[in-house]
Image 1: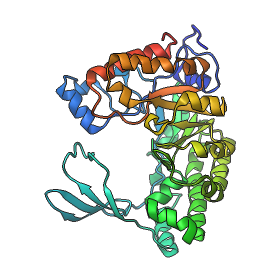
Image 2 (image 1 turned 120 degrees about the vertical axis):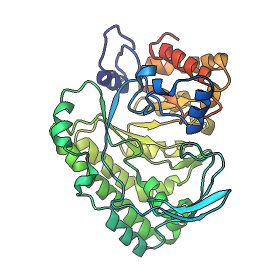
Image 3 (image 1 turned 180 degrees about the horizontal axis):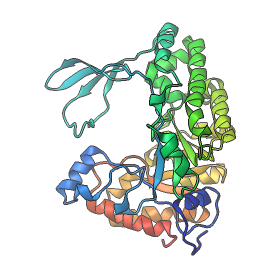
Image 4 (image 1 turned 90 degrees about the vertical axis):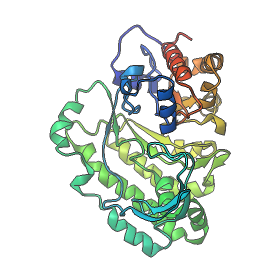
Length: 382
């Protein structure tokens, strides 16, 4: 699996995805809670030593560089933010996506809540609501792309040595994710039964809109050569998916396969799906649709990368799988946990990261130790 040849970050990534020899496995990570950063500062970390965009990479921790081409797949224009009510304990507001929240104020740090908001209402309840919302999703608008990107970015992509990703993290929102944003989890769950025409219309629109917005980037000079696209879904909870395999196959699968086929025909090498929780019963359908890998493999949801590799084989690439709870337990627990993943590192098709953002129960000392020992794991020295 390992070789002595020094590789570019792009070649290293592709070789891991293709189960070919590498000098080491890519060093990727996700990020931290604002409350975690606050704790680490108290423990002596200099926050200005760190570059906090960990998807792009952090030189302090020797992370591999990735470039995320900033395509805006969101609504344009968005809703106006509206504060509806505020007390000493909570605030009620409508966000830029038209969702009304009730949010606990206590524990908020750097704009990040200490707990999930309560969602009161969503912008889509009926087919008419959806037709109105679609007016905010016009694909062909210059504001969806960085200024002068064809002159500045396109020409240098052709000879790049780093990984190039279509859209920022959580930029290419998938089918379940968008419908949940538009309707809410409970309302969407009812709609599969009560208003199937609306759900089919939304799923078809998502595929059409995503492809149309992607076309300029895929057709540009140096474009059509993206290393991967992340389709963000978050369609699972701790014990299983929020949508049944039967409903996934009926409502999402045909559009997902159409979208995956479009991307691969236009030069995107790998299609990866992001979903928290346990999505295992949907994995066969994702693979049938052409998806190449999943992330972040949350361990508390029993997403064990060793077992999943054994079950689904080398056609499914894996990323994530580091149990954040083990990092809080200290050095011995970290060593034991990382050692368990050594066989996957040796085999390939696996890039380990913390299985979500780093939580505030993890000390600065423990995290630095984890990153040091992970470097050993990535080099095959564990």
